[in-house]
Image (cartoon, rainbow, N blue to C red; front, side, top):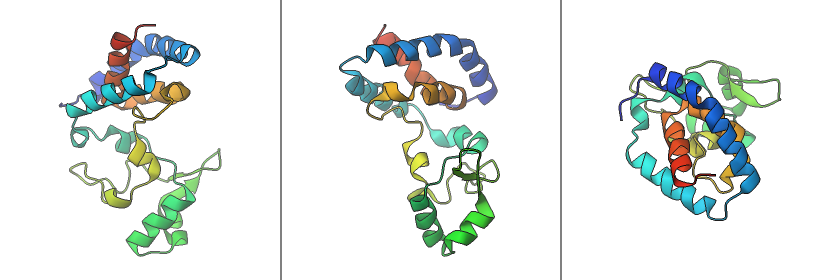
Length: 164
């Protein structure tokens, strides 16, 4: 799947209200087999997605770094946690550790992650479309439809498969 990110965002913005209403209904109705349906949709969408052709998530948004992430990454980079923080992170208004700069400094020119094997938990889980109790993250999912073409496709497939 080749991605035109500008075109994707235009399409996603057009559908924002529809997606928002649907995800709100999903949260209030909580279909019994939602986790199973989400796994199936997630797997089907990601069979046709090559994140290396996009990497928009790494270019325009960054993950939250937990203390465990900081320890694991700094250890693997052979630097002190304090050095890692000083070089790459700051505390945002919610008191979370986030990247000082975007795109992610660990993203190379071919969209490969230089710390993939020990990347932050939030990166491993992104775009969160295969998590249990998916209905709990409707605001995050709505945001992610603007960033991630796969998330947009997952929501579109969910609407088709599970009309509310």
